[in-house]
Image 1 (cartoon, rainbow, N blue to C red):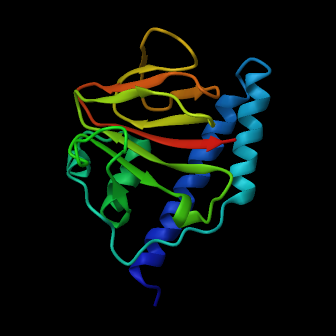
Image 2: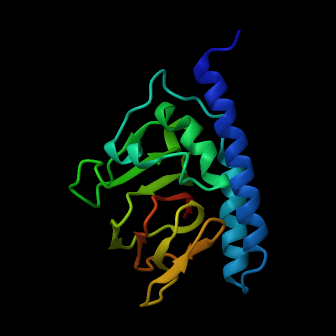
Length: 190
């Protein structure tokens, strides 16, 4: 009989496959050369990724308590079902100790090196701080609504489940959750 961790790891692998497929489909509609960069980054992630290995117990952050199946979209429900088994951590971009902002970094779970991936969770009404970094990235909004500053823009744009958000290298970006938790899958590549 498989260990519960293996069942959760299998469920995570299935989710990641679906999320990457959705990102690839939406990325194909982006203008060139952004399209080529995103497709290249997602292809690198898929090639580097190994089968998920979850720790025996997840680490809980209080922001994860905001994941209520009643408010999660269809895309987000799969995360809600396994949230307690995932290793959540506070972001280093805020000193809230995981109260309003949380990350589940998949790098160690998937054996990633050059690329990174994970989940970002923002409690309703909270903002992920404005920041920039060297890698480019793509997000798939899994659940919640809110607004996002991305792609080098100055203004925040409304997002909803299924939205794709792409940041070029060093673009300033931030996200603000609406009345529901904002949950997104992300992939970063050099």
